[in-house]
Length: 377
Image (cartoon, rainbow, N blue to C red; front, top):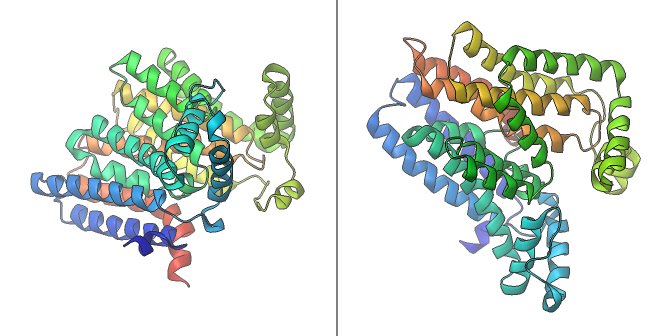
């Protein structure tokens, strides 16, 4: 069993698991039984088992370049282990929770305990969030989350970004408990600073509830970004450098393709219409339910507006080499935007089949980027 986890192909196994879970769910939807009590009970257990297994896969993975930044996290961790006698658990830093967890496991545990902790927070927070928002109907939303084409990558590569965003989604599940919501959101920011953008967007959407305003801003951001190109990210980099002396953020915005190649990273710095289309899935679904179907749900208005604000920020810096890290903070909200109305209200006589069509649409990018290459090997 240990040998199974010591494999460079765990990502492939994960994508196969998601593929078959999607098929399993589509069959239930086609038969109109996905919301039947017995099926719901089975799916709840299945969801917990899958979450546990994914946590083990992510936490026990080998240190390999196949898992992206895993090698850098491992190298940094081993440096802390070598200096553990001098480590303080309560050292203040901008990403204080990340520092605390790293120092704790460097002093008292080992590398895989460290990775398991982050995997448990990453996956467990999303499971708990779906459980709080959707109660016993959490399996389909959880599957939609895991079927994101970036889900695996942010569990083993952009770990801090993924864990921070996951904690923020959990915070959003506590909208009925403001102190708890704020506490968890700040914990997410304590893992990765990008969560502060999510917090600011959520706060703005909380007090200014105007869907058409935010949609207009999102559409305008596409036009401005396409028209002005790299100038926007240069302005933002200068502002970040002046206001916060944030060299990491400035580097994300200004790094050249040549510099990235020296780090072993190859990305496109062009205007990504394919990612705009992916983001537009949430915009289209939200607009349809809010205006066409008159879906009057205050919570949905909030998450939709938060998504629009976060995604508009990313669109403005879409050409930045590491803009995917900013895209992901909105894409983590995307599954909620996509699936929430389907679970909360019945809109069609053949509602389950419409849900099946939605799941297929949501999974299309995950299938194209992750599963199709495996099938074509």
